[in-house]
Image (cartoon, rainbow, N blue to C red):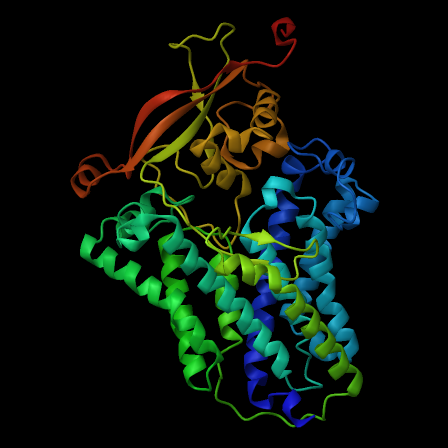
Length: 473
């Protein structure tokens, strides 16, 4: 079938696949380095406890069949190795069928992690990576030109990401309609980046221009993805520029980067297409069957997207093949942070020597400037932002975090930037307090060198010790 492939998009496919492999690599590296404290056998939300109560059909995963920390680590590092091989172009050195199978390996491994990841993996970009990764497996390699149907479905994902995010903003928070959300967002976003303070202090009229431009990019431009070239490429390029602006303004894990990767698939990069033989019949049948399945599964995400009760970041099938997306349907006006402290005193008092735990990414010391971590995902830091919004978000894991701090658990402390206690001297008590944080003004920054000013609000968790700790020497 002459219409089946688009030879002119071979370079776009190449760039897209290599960039997607890089995102996979970051995702698996994040899992490999953080899982023991979060999901391990002695973790805050252990996988074995989850798989004991959730059946395989609800959460398909290799770890439903067998779990050990060693097996999880091997799976995560295997995902890193396969992703690195794909980044280096290993799929192009294989027959077409083998290349497809190779691309399905990281998808299956990451699906296994996400489906047992519980609240640590309840982010929209997990499903977005899985949906994109599954479809990428059927793009083919150097033996065949890119299938038109798969390229179209990649644009369909990008459309849902952008248009869904635009709709949820208009329906969610009045400040998006009033063009005022960026008066707060850079200060209250989950994890500010090194430039977020400067973005916050941009003139307010410019903030309104930013919001208006965002509405155009998310509510109008996505429709242009399905127009002829070069209009579709121009639409994709505008989305890439917008996402890079977001990369500069905050730490959103790999959300912006996977969106950029999707937009790369819609770019028509000018270059001569290499000669390739026609696509084999089995490949055409396979691609069309997969496309039909994905179109069928799109029903619920589309209904959700056009519904007045639209929800963000929802998977409608356990394989995460077609999902719904969205971000920041509401924007916090005030930033709160949970500050965790410990003391060696036998009797905890307000004037005890309370020492603060330092997290890697979330605000803590007002004088410490935010760092750039994205696309790497600091999962505990992100969940601490939710914990500050409401204790209900932390009910599953916060107590377990405190227990592990009281025990000086090595794996948990590795998630932090610094513990105030020596490895062999755990704290007697740990407490948590809620503070209001705000960015300093330019004058305050020049005078104090601090980018944050914080004010005590209330006790979040009273001084807590391990059961039986009174008998410790």
